Length: 502
Image (cartoon, rainbow, N blue to C red):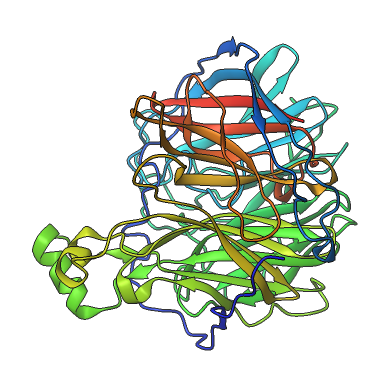
């Protein structure tokens, strides 16, 4: 069994941490440029070179609800790599991957749906983009819908119900173009799968009293594709509280209160399954240590510096009937000036929450050089399991490898196969037999126990360093097809890859 973990602790403080009067002055720059002004479609089928992921262990302990072994000799075939579209810098502080906590790609059978945003020419920021909805069928990608006006700042996550509608979370500005940090009105667009080019039905989520939503929504969006339920979170820009809206199986929206993390949370992964709601978010505040803040200003000249060091999780066992639990601090690197990236969240059939994140304890070079001169800037890909809001296990799946014999991780997501077999699709670097360092995407099965997974190279022609997947959180059914959408070395292109895992 994975080793027990004692480092989790409840987050006892429930007041938001420090943030500026304009909470959107600086937001993390996962990809500064935004999406497309024109559509470019280039399709290339990958030569069917298969890779093998060998493991003789089970995916996860049966007591945690994951059933079925991963047989030795599991194959992954990169079937398609292609450009869907490209993006144009909107100069509004966001980018095509900005909503990385919630997916923009979802699959139902042979249909793949993708949300993108287009930058308006000569439209002043911040809300100077509009959403696009793409579909991929047997003939490739088609742009089937787009917003009429440029009223969005951020990418618009999507979710689907199997055999039913496709939903898109929008956050249009309600103020004139060029108004920064202005009020916005969260909406959900419902597209009819049978008539995808018909104008969508517009739904208005319900929220508790006291909202103040702006163009920096930090929203999370997810679906339970089996029941048709949706979950939407949007942050109050003044208080840093998340307001929760829930669409029940009858299609009715309900306000479900608020979530207050110990400090402002951002980029949440949200999951809804069997009536339970789960949220993972990363803390996002101004450097809290005054001495370090002064040192950074001396070195950079910047008046502010935001940090991402504390990872939180909360859940409701019965959305609408039970409140969200007191937030749990899953991990922190506050004491060493590090950084954490929340990467993925999966809820299995037994209700266990599987968390994936990247940890770099000494990420800031300015702090490291002065206060921790002997420390190395290593990266650790961490995997934790929680049950009923309590920690069960945690282990390191990959870490910086100086000799290049194993994967040095840079990014990762889960892929959930048939029978809830759990895999990693990662981006990182290794060295080849000649000692040359290369970067690529890799696949690995997550095994039971302390043993690290064995990563197999996918040999992508255009590796993706930042990407979304067809996650069950967005309504996609677990299975042998892995859809990737993201960016690589050939920006401003936005790419798609289809990988078959068996």
